[in-house]
Structures are given as C-alpha cells and as structure tokens.
Image (cartoon, rainbow, N blue to C red; front, side, top):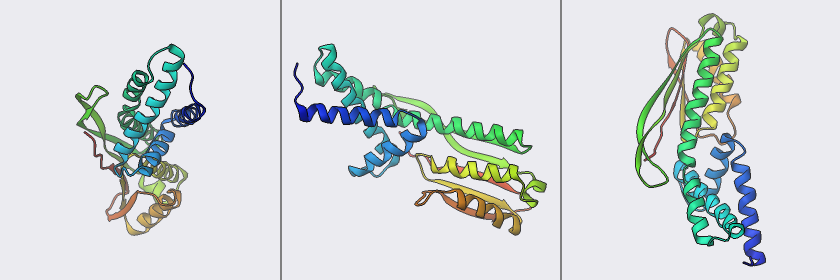
Length: 219
C-alpha cells in the first residue's frame, strides 16, 4: 500500500502530536484541550476527548498501513483508545490531589481528598461510574502561616499548579484572618499562570485553610 506524500506528512504530524501529549498527563491536559478548542470545542473535557480520539485515529491509521489492515479500521481502533483521555485526565487529577494531600500531611497539616462519582462514557459508549475530584481541603498550620513558613508557601504554590493543570475550572478558597489571607492569596496568585481559569477567593475565618474545588462537567 502506497501512502501519498501529503497523507504521510499528516500522519507523521499526528504521531508527533500524539507523542507530545502522551509524554505526561499534565501535557495531555494542556495540549489536547488546546487542539480541541482550536476546532471550536468549548468544553475542556470534550476538547480533550475529541482531540485524543483524533490523535488515536491518526496513529491507528498509520499502524494499519504497516500491518496490512484498512486505514479506516485502524482509525476506529486508534480513535477508541484516544477517546479515553478525558477519563485519564480526571484520574490524574485525583492522583495529584492525593499526592499533595500526602505532602501536606507530612508537613504537619491535615488534608482530605473528597471525590464524587459521576457516569462517564467509556470507549464503547457505555456509561460507567468514575470518581472525580470534588475538593481538596487542607487545614494549614496556624503558626506556619503566621510566620510565612516555607511549608505553607510550598503547599500554596503546588495547589496553584494543580489548579492550573486541571481539565476543569477550579476555585481556590483561602480562609483565615485578614493578614494571613492576604499573604496566602499573594502566594497563590504569583504561582498561577497567565490567563489561568482558576478563581481565587478569600473567606474570613479564625483558622487558616486552603480548599481546592474543581467543577467537573463529564458524562
């Protein structure tokens, strides 16, 4: 089977993109969404899922050439695998939240990862229950916050990075006395990327706390 130069070039570009987005989950979050948005898909999960399917289709089609199968069959198989990217993004988000919670606990804070179960379509189109992140609650150490400690500063920066890497818009809520809230907000906002979808809000409270809450839209 001979592949014409334009098709060969397109497939090569597809594989390059596929390798890029599969090099790490954070890259999947950003790259697949960006490519999906470029073709007019507004929802982040849908953008990621559709782009993942397109990339899988291209890789499957090229693989079919070397295996002697039809390009259409290869596209279907590859696209089915790529369509799982939205599920993988949510699993990655829960895993990252648990890692940050473990770091917070190791630093002396108390952290809780809350999940909720939603129905997500798998590659066969069947609905299956999938846990997604509901919130990450970190009760910060008052003394460390008051002294602008490095433990709390590190947690705030990592929380900002986790929010930025999310497939869905995230709200970071910072609770505590005013002086402490102002410092915590400055740390988080300095760590957020330009054009972030993350919202930072502050709430008066006696004890300092950080709450990271995405709003998933899947199914």
